Image (cartoon, rainbow, N blue to C red; front, side, top):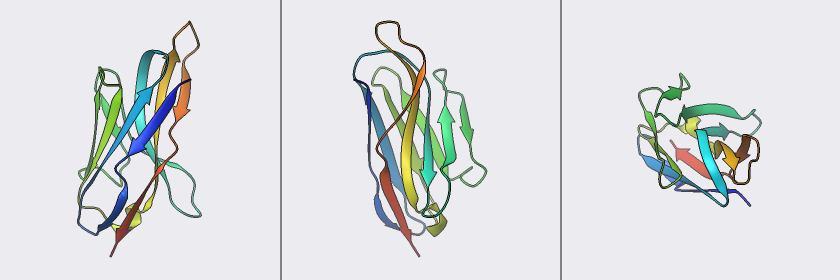
Length: 121
């Protein structure tokens, strides 16, 4: 059973920082792209940032220069460092990983349960 577990969300004032973490566990053969998405109330889930196994990164325009995604392959963990937070960053943040389970399974996308980030003005 593969699981992605996020942590690090919370309440912060505008201009503050938070660091999200997401650990993949279970019977995993390999992990490809890992990323963070977010969903604000009444809006669709949107891409925040992704990082490949080779550490290539991609960011939404709205977070470029403020957020940094990174990963630790041996620890099967992806991080999102969020600086200069704005009220419009308020959302539930979801971790995503495209991975191959052990035993020859296909590459499949998995989601975490989400962690709330609230930025007050």
